[in-house]
Length: 108
Image (cartoon, rainbow, N blue to C red; front, side):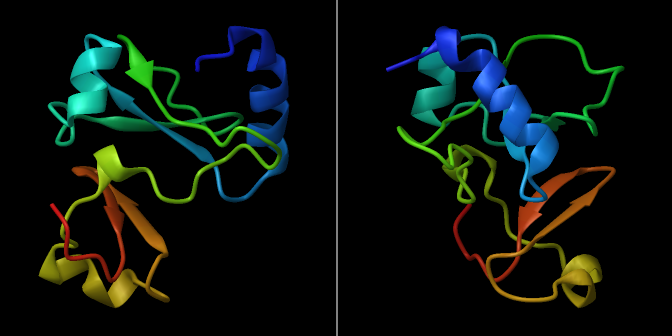
């Protein structure tokens, strides 16, 4: 269930963690949940947020601290071959101008 009352807790954790909360641009929660926006732009919540990003962004959280989810299933993409050398380990991530990629992940 959505908890807007925890927004300040999520934001605080997003500033203090290196893992980051990853939000996907989508028009509605239902579209986000269905995976219809999996190829949409993503942004990181917190100090590193793209201040030029506009629109509605959605993300999932855990039900207890730490709230950040390291596996955001709607943002998984195959890592392009030209970025594979940037992956330090499976489960890590790479962010480039075209999007966010999970290293060592074969799901689309």
